[in-house]
Image (cartoon, rainbow, N blue to C red; front, side, top):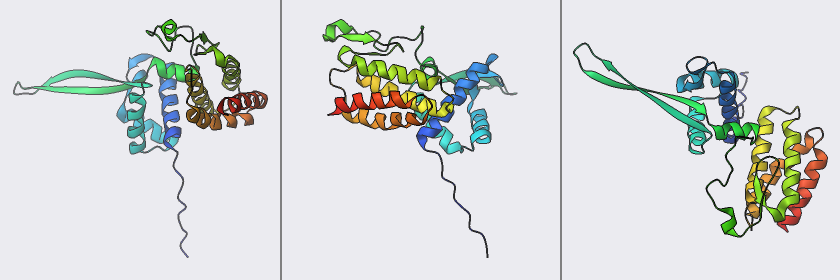
Length: 225
């Protein structure tokens, strides 16, 4: 009797995006040149080859999610133009596209730092009439949500310093940032916060985070009622 093939589940788009962003981050971190084999910027053919080898991603999965990462500003495309002169003297234009992580993409993984551009750069906060405060991780929120904002910073730091897989850290930190972005508004979008909170709650399985998760969940519960 022939054995039936067991279909393996494919990673979700969000999981693929985390894998890809981490790939570009690691490449930039270990780069010894701007482009090329050890460069921070890499050709799409090499991206597909390396991510297939390391994570089994298909060309379609990589291409579609690369488009998303570029549109969100996490990755950028760098086009190098050149020309080739044919034997008959005809000049043939040619271009090669390279891809690399942006500063925003690095901050997505590392968290905001000393050189991170303020989220509301160019906006006159005082003209809104809101009391905006800056948290320890660089995020700015409405002062009325300061307790929740501070608790999120503590949870974010605990996650970043934990031994959890890097892809899990990225997912959790991304949703914490989503919640903090909503806290900059006088009236946050409760549906967005509730959805992001469900992911954040999974951090309770990380050593040292259960108390912080419970505190954050409780404060969010009060905000959503």
